Image 1: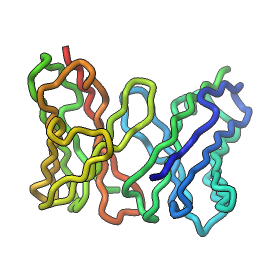
Image 2 (image 1 turned 180 degrees about the horizontal axis):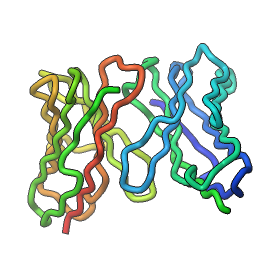
Image 3 (image 1 turned 60 degrees about the horizontal axis):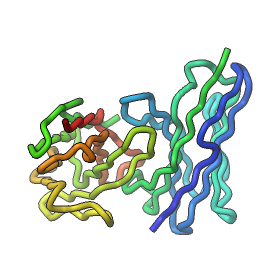
Length: 113
Length: 114
């Protein structure tokens, strides 16, 4: 089955700096890669996703890049703000839709003033 | 977007008792529901996939007799934790599937077994 690794497990940045979180996956059949932000006790919130036919996608301060050959994808957050502090999860799915997801191990992002 | 309503949001039960968690799709029909479990400070792990009108498919290591899943209608899937023990204490969350372009999660249920 699919295995998704995520690094780093914790990340502390100063407000205004950029944050980068990286994930690698094992199943070459995976073709949908969402990123989620989760606050304590809450459901995961989709912040951006990318499909295998696209190499990069951007939405305001958030961007995701995908390298299918290397089987890795990354989340980039620019101009970080304190409200960006949360746990971020990457995930992968082999169906191209948001069905059965394999999640990464999570990254706790702390944005300090 | 589509709304998945999960209840209860939290529950405390005594060891040995059973707890039922419901997930309802409010404005659409969910042919498939995914059930995840998340231990504190850990990731979401898929437990099982339920398909309306058929038996659930469980992931390796998940006891099907302990975690009973029913998906009797296109708008309701339930997870029953039978004979709960403290090690079952976790955050349980459902997600509607069926070909959607993004996952629609329920609010999650915090189960504490004392």
